[in-house]
Image (cartoon, rainbow, N blue to C red; front, side):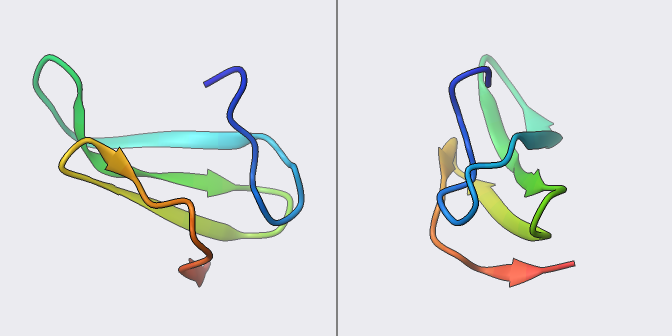
Length: 53
């Protein structure tokens, strides 16, 4: 998490975990700076611009 940054504004990301086994299976990464949410599904973060809060 320390090296991950928002691809849009380079802001820090906050992690919300919805489902975790050995690794995070489902959740989201949220950029507080620009409001973009990046979903995590099946353990893979989708770092494409999806939606804003």
